[in-house]
Length: 185
Image (cartoon, rainbow, N blue to C red; front, side, top):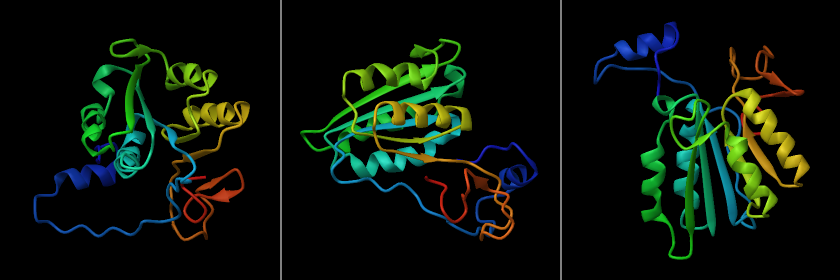
């Protein structure tokens, strides 16, 4: 999924089928699910839902419960909700998959943010671990919730990666370089 938001992504959108495109990567480390965690919360905000779709597909045959919470400003901005719903076909017979959507304007799902859907689940003890990707504010809030409820969490942080080999430091986050140590921390 690539949206035309800047000079490079606009050029990508101008490519025709069959045109070449050189890409370096992937860099850093992705999600690594502990096999002991069977009740997963996958939380995506905006474009952050993209890597979680792959994670949900990988964990559907293994996990007992996958609770996916997708958030956006409005219903028009929600991404992949149908694709997450389709993952049920991959799940084992014992797996339960639940999808919540949240929109800040209340146009679909729960009005509010992803944390508004997550907190009740945490209070009932229904989650073993949190996996998330999205804007920094959302990830910071999820980090605080993980600490408050003593749950492991893996958060995929976004940053502009200039060199992508750990030299320039432009992707530093909390003392780590996202191109080498992350983006999942």
